[in-house]
Length: 123
Image (cartoon, rainbow, N blue to C red; front, side, top):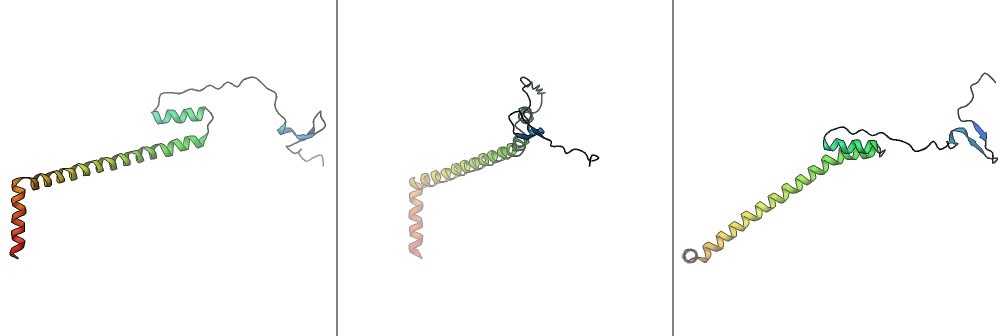
């Protein structure tokens, strides 16, 4: 059976007497690893993604930045629009209440109340 290729994971015996695969033997320390990172001018959202990729964070962080970035902007915009609408609604309702109170409290408002009472009594 010498014509068969040798299997890839070879088993070797270490000096302490234990057996291990050759692909699991720790490699000797070769010094600090130098990472050259080049960040070119790009849109602000892409710069963060390039930083994440260059620092070894991985595709998950980039995918989260791509997906959740615009999603967060959309959610904040929707919240701001809702708050603006509620503020406008409060302003209009406040103006209506002010107008009603002002008209009822004046002499013409008092006369209008008397006229309504007289009209109800006639029926």
